Image (cartoon, rainbow, N blue to C red; front, side, top):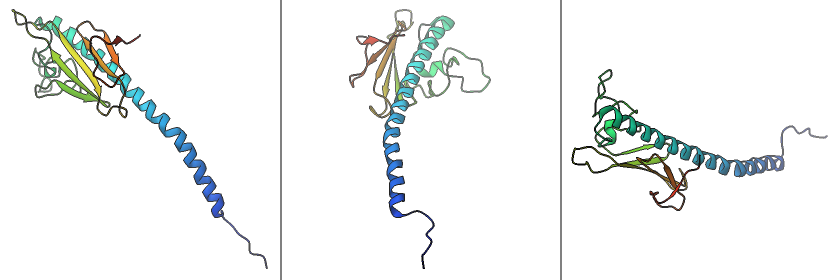
Amino acid sequence: MRKSSKGFTLIELLIVIAIILIIAAIAIPNLLRSRIAANQASAVGSLRTYNTAEVTYATTYNTGFSANLTYLGPPATAGATPDSTAAGLMDNVLAPTGGTDTASKSGYAFTYSPGAPDSSGHINTFAFWADPIVRGTTGTNSYYTDESGVIRQNSNNTQASSADSPLAG
């Protein structure tokens, strides 16, 4: 009497699991690299947004650049008229409330440093840094920009500065 077997043998199941693991081993590192690339592109885009907002702020309010990031954000009350302390040039993600000069987005931490006011009280210089929150996981490059509008990159595990190479394109 021959017994009819239906289903898979243990060997067949182990082979399928091994194939799935091999595919995952190939796909996961590529997924992580693409996520890092997306975070870095977002950081560069955010620095461009900061540059544009600072130039707009300086020309709109004729006080030089902003004294902190909060000044670039929206007014506290919805529908309120923007002013020099809440210009409405960016959202609360990149311009957090509370008078802080730091923000984070897409795996990067942004730091703002306004220059010292001149004799008329105008701030004529500024600097922004974008550093990965977890270097090697959320990003590998650090970025820097200032009132020149040039975004500079450092890939050497240190904070970027005005001495680093500008981004191409």
